[in-house]
Length: 246
Image (cartoon, rainbow, N blue to C red; front, side):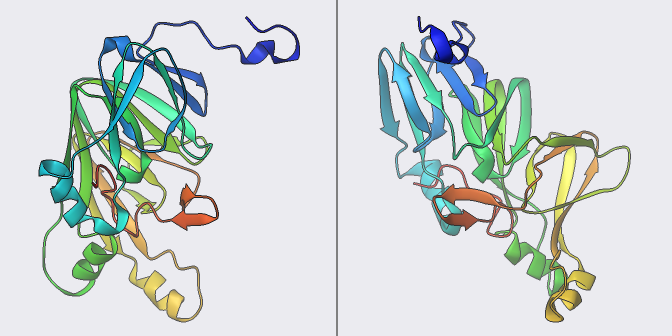
């Protein structure tokens, strides 16, 4: 045990499968079973931990083809030790699904229990004009669905807000959306006023996501998702499905 000035940073000796050491660092206890995590998210581990990149076939291959401009490779972690995960110093949010599902911006997914199924879904429809433009800008109407029983950890660029979409019409900037609950509908749309203002050097608040139904949506206080040092990549305008590209 460390004493002195650094004692406040001692590891919490909790046995929870997913535990927040602090708001930016997640500890996963592997004795409860394997987990799927974002490649590059491991910052430390204790005990036995094995890391295996997800294969390039099957679902992973399909996802890469669908969202090749924003593929985020996943890895499976096995063992009986403890793994510490983070992503670019972003805040981490943990939830437990019990035979439930959430849908999310793939770039926000940090880790989830291997018992949770991940899938890419195509939403919205075809058509032309403004709707087709919105679809193209939103990555072709792709979203990541996490379904089953187990833990899910996502990241947000700062403390998020959770909005009840049933209480009022809810619209968010595509880059600010983290995830939303089952029962919520989502449709990309273009603010034509924003399109005109962009042509005149205006605000540029053009691509938006409109939510309805029953449930909630989580929004981060930022319009950009950091992907690497000195590089910023959009979480919404480049495509909603960013998880598991091989």
